Image 1 (cartoon, one colour):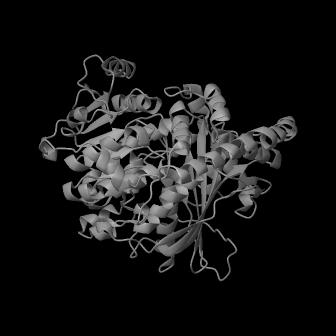
Image 2 (cartoon, rainbow, N blue to C red):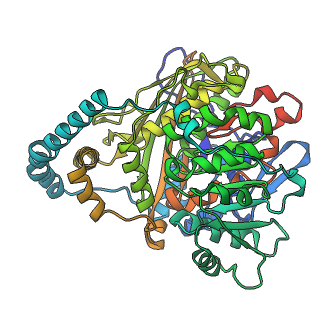
Image 3 (spheres, rainbow, N blue to C red):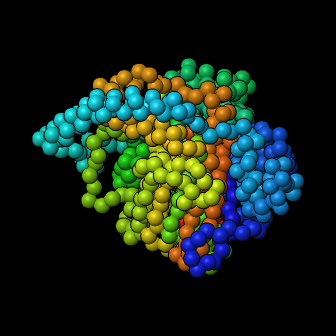
Length: 586
C-alpha cells in the first residue's frame, strides 16, 4: 500500500503529522506502472478478512476522461490518502467502510494479514557471537583479505581493466535488417527468460490477466529451449487453444536475436544475470527501435548500457527501461511521491532529505545469488565521464545525491515513534536502491520535480530488537566476506539455491515488504509515506512489474531518448507538449 500524509509547515525540524485530507492521485507513469498491480474493486472493508490477495483499489483518476482498471490478480497494492481513525478501537477493527485507510490502517494491516516481522532468539544471537565471530575473524576474514590482496597485485602488475570502448570494439558489428514500423509489428511484448523463476511467474501472470487468444494483447515467450518454453506455457494454462508463440533465441548467439526483437513492440526480460545475458539484447533493441524492460539490479551493467547504446536509442526512439522490479521500484517511487507531495502541498519547498525504513520477509533465488557472485568477480570498467550522470543528449548533470545508508546498528526511534524500541541495520540492496535514486535525481527536471539540486538519501532495515538486529547484521557481514574469496564462496554456492531454483508458493505467500518513507524539505516541512506489498516482492510482484512497462502504450508517452533505468514520468505534462518536464526518465 502507498499512503502519503500532508506535510506541515513548521519552524523547527520536529516531525508533526496531522490528519491528512483525501487527495486525487495525478496522472503519472507511476500510476500506470502500478495500475497493473491492482485488482477488481471490492470495498476496502474486505481487508478485514486478513487475506493478502484481497483487492484494495482498482482504478485511478486520469485526465482527459481516461481510467485504468485491472483484472483480478494475486497481488494488491494501494495508493491513496486519508484521515486517521477516530480511536485506537477503530484502528483495531480494521479500515473504515468508507474506503479511506489511515496510516494506522496500513500498519495494522500487516498483523491482519498474518505478517510477522522476523525475530531471532537469544540462543541464536549467543551462538552467532560465540561461534560465528571467531570463525569470521580467525578463518573467513583472513582468507578473504589474502585473496583480495593477491587479486589487487595481479591487477596492478597484469593487464589493466578494459575500457568500455575496448569492449565495444571486440563485439561483432550489428547489421540491422530493416526496421519494421511499430504499428506493423506482430507482438505487443515478448517475454524473454520465461523458463526462470521470475519468468515462469510472469508467464502465468500474462496468461491469467491477458489471456492467450491474442484479443487483449499479442504476446510470445522466448528462450533457448523450445521444449522448456512449451512446458512453461502448459503450466501457465496457455498451451491448448492459445495463440502464444515460442521464439527460440540464444542471447549469446547474435544471429538469433534479429527474430527476437524486430517484430515486437517491446521485450520484457527476466533473463539474468544481465551482465552475462543482457547486453546483446539491449543493443539489438536500441538499434531496432524496440522497447525493452528488465528486472536487473546491476548498476555497473546498466551504466555500461547507458554509455554504449544511449545514442542508438535516441536515434531510433527505443526506450530501454531497467530496474523494473523489486530493484528498485518501491524506493524510487517512495522518493518520487514524497517529493511530489511536498511540492504540491508546500508550494516552493523541495525535498532535501529522504529516509526509507524497510521491513521485509522474503526468500532468494539461485539466479539472484549467481548475479551477486558475478558482480563480485567482475572488474569495473573505467569512464572519462560517469554515464550514470548523463542526461539526454550527453550533457552531464550537476544534480547530486549524498548516500547515508545504514552501515552499523543503531536505535530506530529517531526516524519515527512508530519504531520505538526497534533497531536499524544495513539493507543488502540499499546501495543499489540509492544509486537508482541518485540516477533519478541526476536527470530530474529542475522545474517541478520537487527535489533540491542536492538530496541526502538514507536506507536501512528495521529489526524488532537488538538481538535480531545483531543476528541479521552478522549474517550479512559473514555472507559478504565469505563470498569474496573462492574457497568459502564455493562452499556458499553448494548450500544456497542454484540458478532456476527459487522460493515456493508458500514462501511467497508468507513474504511481504513495507517501506516507510520520511522526507524533509528545505524549509523544514515533513512528509511521511508507507508502501506495503502483501506478497514476496522479489519474485511474485517483480514478475508483474516487469510487464507493466509494455502495456497501456506506456512506452509511447516517454520521450524518444536514451537508456532509462526506471521511469516515473508526468504523463499529463507530456500530453500538453512539455516533454522536458519528465521527472525521472533516463
